[in-house]
Length: 316
Length: 316
Ligand SMILES: NC(=O)c1ccc[n+]([C@@H]2O[C@H](COP(=O)([O-])OP(=O)(O)OC[C@H]3O[C@@H](n4cnc5c(N)ncnc54)[C@H](OP(=O)(O)O)[C@@H]3O)[C@@H](O)[C@H]2O)c1
Ligand SMILES: NC(=O)c1ccc[n+]([C@@H]2O[C@H](COP(=O)([O-])OP(=O)(O)OC[C@H]3O[C@@H](n4cnc5c(N)ncnc54)[C@H](OP(=O)(O)O)[C@@H]3O)[C@@H](O)[C@H]2O)c1
Image 1 (cartoon, rainbow over the protein chains, first blue to last red):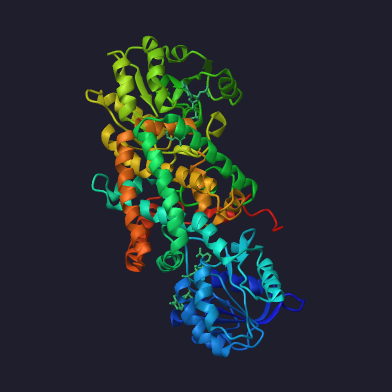
Image 2: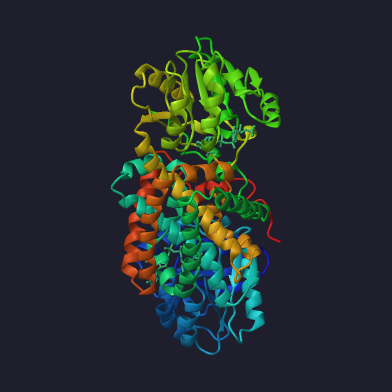
């Protein structure tokens, strides 16, 4: 903890997987809280969090962790937010800030808001950072560095509470942006949810073919396919909940994707090289923009060349 | 060049982009050829190859490079293979091995075979290795390390010629596999061509939305989208040719992909979480297989965390 006064006296993290543990590490490292209370439903996960020394107190009852906390953050799958809110609501301290990290915002607000007491400040949030791994061991302090956290304050949210949460996330290394929950859900549908869906889908398609074996798919995956398998190795529970809870925006973006794909299919069928060439040229500009914005590495192949593991095996 | 006798006296590389230059670097480094003749159609590219000292002689006429060569490898876009073969055919030395690196094999064979003299050995090949960059500066010697090169010998190919080409590719660090051109084109459609097509497509869809701006797509890309933009930054000419020349296999695999996607769409629409959960669980096994096969890194996020560039900017 830093010498300065911590931003919060007591924070409670309900759920201590990839996101919860990364927040805990930041709160500790940057002195954002004097006391970090950690709750999770399974004893196994709680014990692991304690072994990793992620917090100051450990609870199997979410309400116990939330009691007396100035900031409570739900770090559980989107579909569990309502049930967890019901548990903690009676224990919440008046004036506490209640937030979450869910990848969908409209549904989380619909679940949580009616259950929260009048005298707490509800500021929904979503850190746009993650990896394909999960659980308390997956967290690391740099996860939020240079990534965006989106706040989607609801009508009537106290601006001071939003500001404090913004300071908290900036303390974790994130940049912070504010928008409506509805817009958030549309944006995420195209930059995250549909990409995950098509990654899961192509991996499923490849696994089910009769003409090409699974072992061929694995062996020859370096020609493009392997990129998709990373995303398609993400947590099934989390992603099931994302799709069930952001249904409308996902279906809308998916319809656009399929429409565009049908037109590429037609171009291939009729040998229309110009349509293909024109699209393949346009898409490069977006990649350049992402690299210039510091949101991806410019190294070829994500810099995989330099990573150990992929290339260390000798040809057999 | 190593002290031992080189595998070939003279090799000719027709086309000196990412693949051609990576072959040249390997041929030099591992003593696979006494003389490396390089040809490319544009003076600018040829000068750059010479500046990089990739070969021993430099030619704007492909036939000049091919003359007297024991191994000639076409490293040009798939659609250019017929025209280049026409140029070099009269110059080919009897007994020479003629090969290529095209990402499609059926069409390349159909283009080249009828134009080649009877007295040369035609052994089509495809190294399954690449990055999103192109041109002679993009090459590097480790490109083929631990990756597969597929040979698709045609009926009547001299096994000794196939064996020598296999030894050449193993000298470049690759593992070598043999299969029919038809099967190659099916396998590549699912592990490479369709993945590239859907990556190009989602980037196009995202760029064209009215409800979400391009700058939002770029800013928030780290939640999944950015992975697709790497692939969608690949060379437009090369990829246009791939889709035009592997039409049937691509359309077949694309139909399967779309069918599967429609069923996921239905699951989302009707709130069928089990179907989603079941697929999202199955797909993880494929990822594990790829990592165990040494075809990708196990580090979270492709090990991007450790790469400079992405994280070096301070939050603003
Ligand atoms: N992973 C990402 O890339 C990412 C990025 C941004 C936002 N998010 C959001 O962050 C949240 C957590 O994701 P994560 O990646 O940290 O997940 P995770 O690593 O799988 O951890 C999930 C945590 O939630 C708990 N949990 C699971 N199901 C629960 C239930 N039904 N009721 C109560 N607690 C439950 C788990 O407890 P036990 O282990 O004790 O069962 C665990 O503590 C999700 O809402 C997700 O949308 C994820
Ligand atoms: N990139 C990959 O990931 C990858 C992987 C495996 C296989 N391949 C295959 O390898 C081949 C070359 O790809 P690459 O990535 O090395 O391409 P590249 O870096 O773009 O280089 C292409 C080379 O081909 C020449 N060329 C282009 N169009 C031509 C034409 N119409 N006629 C004659 N020469 C032409 C270029 O000459 P100028 O510069 O002089 O115009 C250049 O020397 C393609 O067949 C591709 O399918 C690529």
